Image (cartoon, rainbow, N blue to C red; front, side, top):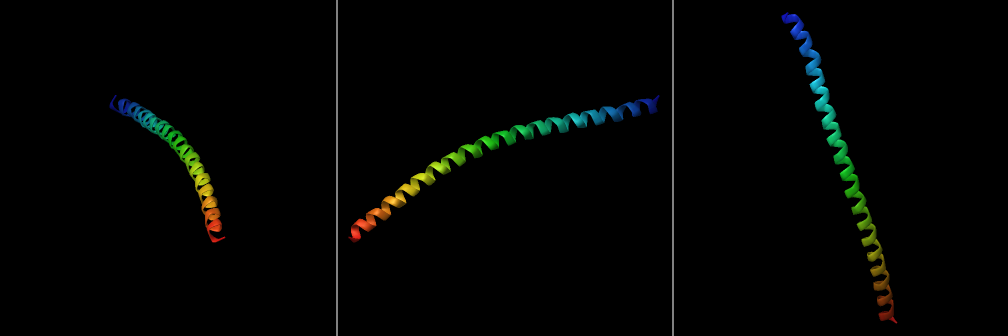
Length: 69
């Protein structure tokens, strides 16, 4: 009887471990999706700032050229 109970405990423990790993992976997937969203928003902000910086650099260059002449 003890052997039968110990044999049943192994699949139960394996099932619990599998459930824990699966829950952990689901949490990791959700975290990755959130990170991708954040990175996407940051990328858009960087693009916007890059465009503004380029405009300012051109305007600065034009002002310097105007000042020289």
